[in-house]
Image 1 (cartoon, one colour):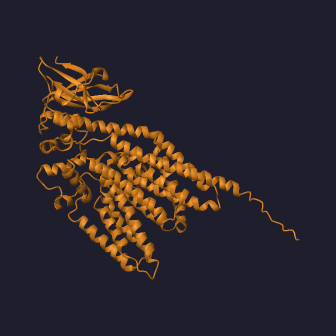
Image 2 (cartoon, one colour; image 1 turned 45 degrees about the vertical axis):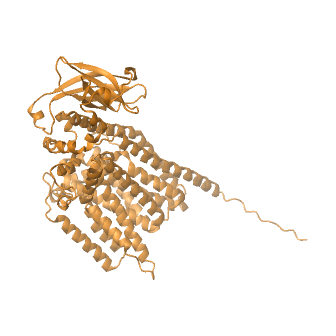
Image 3 (spheres, one colour; image 1 turned 90 degrees about the vertical axis):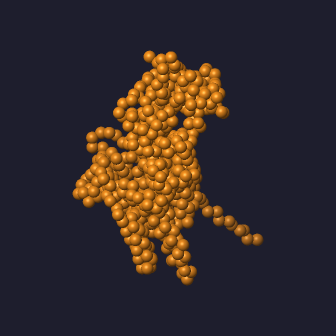
Length: 590
């Protein structure tokens, strides 16, 4: 009987470290995905805690148009130029908020958040459909996209309903490029004829971007370049070019350059300033130190990153259609930054750092990061730990961002307080030029809009507090034990009948601005509002959340002037069910 020998192969020494690295990258992919989801939750927290129903700056225009008797969906108004933009789609959003949601900004802010969620879903889906990303790579990529799309550094676009115009174009740009690549993918698989549906979606998305913000017009030449690079048929290329030309011709019909904006041609004559502006535009989310010459550091970082971008472009052939999508989106972001610099260079370099521009800048960094991430994943055969290093770098960025999140939250709370203080002034009928200038700088606008807002119960005039004005305090709110809150009055500023006060109109007049602090002792949180009463009648309101060291428990309240025989009593409105009034202090006439 022959002996049968079994050959046992010895383990490959390289397999154990590779398996261990794979387990680590798997855990890190979940950590990065969790970091992205946490960023979404943080962004939602910012939206909710900084919410105000009062419009802010450009958001007043829609109410002003309606107050003048014009239909807010009138084609002439929809087409009317706003600075250098034709905001057809954003104005439709504003009209819906006005007509169906009492101009309370909820629809607009929810719309902004939903658009960003759709953008994330589109990017995450395209990773799989166009890039074939799965497992560790897909989870890591989705976490990066979630982090960039919802990073609080773009807080202006999450707290200002009008800014729906800033989140629509990047979403439409991604949709347009994804649809074009899907059409190209179908066209490359004969004998089945490619369906035109993706091509139609791509063109419609480009048109949607163009009529959401001026930068959306940049998609037309980029789509033509993309179609040529993808070697689509000549008639398809000509069709995209012709559609873009017609759209641009309509856009420029009766177009006038905004007064006060820089001439793009003149801006090109200052290349160094243009470079500084673009560097600030794309690098303002990075830590900044106000020292002489620091812009040179930013410029050096930008050049380094562009060099790395050029190296990353070599991965296009490996990453298939998804890499092309990322490159096209980055080109759109870069072109947007350049166009913004050309049109707003006269406002100064610091203007490039406003948070609303971060939606575009962060999308650029998102795509660049995804391109590097995919390249490092594919390089594991030659450099087994490169993907792991990329994940660790991403986690380091997440940690740095987390340390700065508190600062961003404080900024948004400060913005929210100015909004709520202005709302309290309007409800109280106080012409406080300092407070109201925070939400709109021109007094004449309040004269035209406030009577219309009151009559139609819009914005703050639809709040429950508005209905209590002039009512007995005891019937408007149940009284809470005074031990349930603490606070005091600190300063009183008279809003006298000066020319600046009387010029407001709109039912606004003189009175008192009172500052102080209040705290809900039982729930250990800020009261929801402040109410002023004279002779047990509600006469004024106040906003909580003013920063005073070491916490934001300050308030600003408003009250009409009163006779020496009377006194104004201030109450904190506690977050009970129903809301209750807790006594703070009494102000006597001097």
